[in-house]
Amino acid sequence: MELWLLGSKSALLLFIGYMLYGTPHDDSFRPAYMLVLLIYTCLSFGIPPLRRIKMASLAVSALSAALAIYGALELHPVFLLLAVPNLYEAAWGVGADNWQTAAVLAAAAWLLPAQNRPVYALASALCLMLYMSTCALHKRLALREEERDKLQDDARRLTRALADNEEYARQSEYTIKLEERGRLSQQIHDEIGHSMAGALIQMEAARRLLDSNRAKAEELLGNAIVISKEGLERIRLTLKQSKPPAEQLGIGRLQLFVDQLSAKQDIRATLNYAGDLDTITQLQWRIIQANVTEAVTNSLKYSGAESIAVEVLVLNKFVKAVVRDDGRGANKVVKGLGIVGMEERAASEGGTIIVDGSRGFSVTTLLPVRAGS
Image 1 (spheres, rainbow, N blue to C red):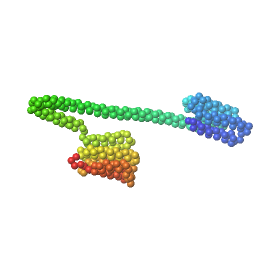
Image 2: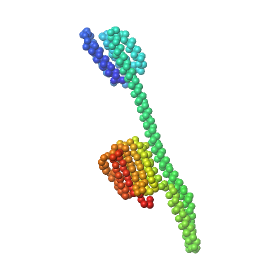
Image 3: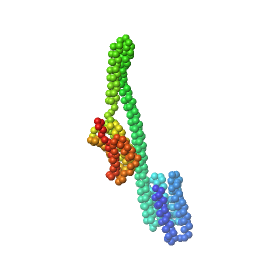
Image 4: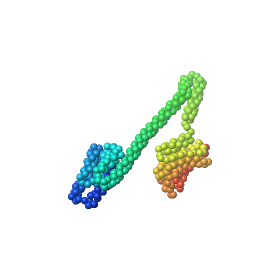
């Protein structure tokens, strides 16, 4: 608002200066013209710093308008043009209606001689259009700021909700681990604890009968050995049933990694797999996970990609893990520490790495299928 007011006042001052000094007039009034123009200029350009003080701003606007009216009545009618932006400035300060202000300005036109009214009407109309356009712009800006504040509040609320959800997920994971430990402990106690206690009792009895009844002692020891073997077998079966298969652990970690990548980064990430995943050993899964993580990190840093695809394929002789993006490729691939590290990990299992930068960027890890795996 301040800019259009200053601009309109400057334009009117130039126009009035031309009318007063560029056309023939009585020279005796010229010092008075200059004094009024200088005082008006000081008042007008002193208003913006007082904008934050509402009453002071209104007082200066009213004083400037009064000076313009005085100049119009006592010196020259053209001074009334200077009152137009000041009245709009006062209307803006008190929140008056646009058309009410325009009506007041139209009524003031009767103070001018008939030959000056067209110029006054033109100046008033131009100021009215500028004022209404500026008011509409301020309303739109206020609406945009309100929408921005709302979006910021929503973003903060979603951030807090996401943090709460992550904390809840960590607590849930910890609780699940505790429950699983408790379940295993209770299961081992129920299924094996009594058996091992019985075996211990029989071994204690056998020790007491070893001198007096050796045959009975040997029988009790045999029973204790059988019970102990059965208990150990039950422990082994319980732990085996509780442990998920290696392929589920490997592909599950990869799927979790890809899901977190899509959720936390502005990028589309997908995972596809095919073949007999049972043939992939745990060590190979660790190599695949490390190489995929390194390749994805490089894509995020350097490629500017919008999507990343991860594939795990089990072929007849090789396990093939590919990370491919649609970002900036490279005609000549320079091996950094990341690629060298991937090559070393693959070579530890007899595998290799293939890097291609022709269409996007892709890193392929090839590992041999182990016989009997």
